[in-house]
Length: 122
Image (cartoon, rainbow, N blue to C red; front, side, top):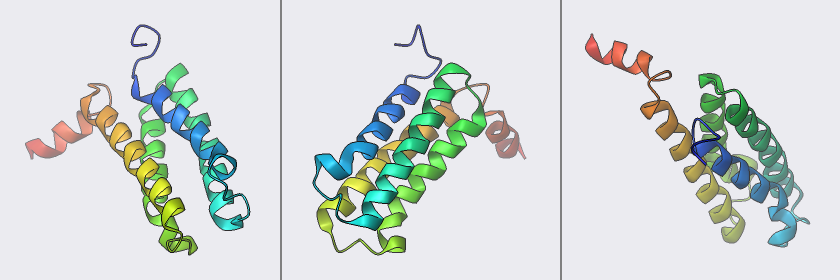
């Protein structure tokens, strides 16, 4: 995979996006309109951004993936479905993985982490 992609994390995040998109039907919560819409919408955006990052890598795509991961972590409480423990755990778990993978890419890619080195030197 590393021969074809600059970062292996981007195709993994795209697969997570696909899983999120399909999750309302796979895990039988399509009748939970807010949680289902959140999973499907974030899944589509995550797939698009991750595929874009795989094809033409840019730091803003990684930051967008990180923001989507953070949103997934907080969305059950913001949107009011935290009481559905199964859906909440799936959403938060996916968010943590997406956020960690995006942060990993930003921290380890020499083209992206120059801002970090510059700020730490001061």
